Amino acid sequence: MGTRKSKEKTYELKYTGWLTNENSPIYLHYGTDNWSEISECKMRKLKSCYKTEVTIPAGMTSWSFCFRDSNGNWDNNYGNDYWYTPTIGETYSCVEIAETEVAPKVTKVKKTVKKGE
Image 1 (tube, rainbow, N blue to C red):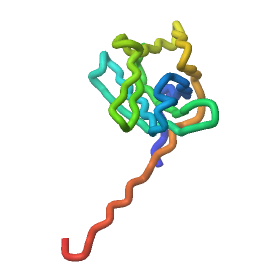
Image 2: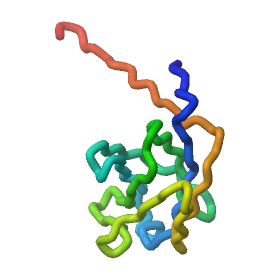
Image 3: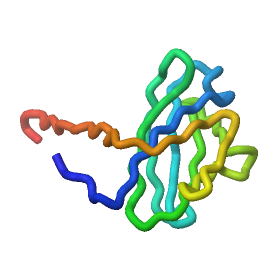
């Protein structure tokens, strides 16, 4: 298991937007450097929202994000994307963001090799 660099920041996001009504898994799609570095992670379904943690690289002053479900529906804040700048702390009615010390869960992928390959 790797260690986090001290300057990286981990944030917890909670989403309650309209995609939660679609009964489909929801993914956080986010980017730094004006979308040049793009990542995506599946959110966990809770009783009142969908939740995930993300770690943002050191030196990033803001990051943009949107949400999608597995049916191809996107919530991108009406084409404006959602933005977060820690020093400003933007607020949206359907997104709650908090800095946390909880590191994101790392999923290990085990490669299975079939006999004869």
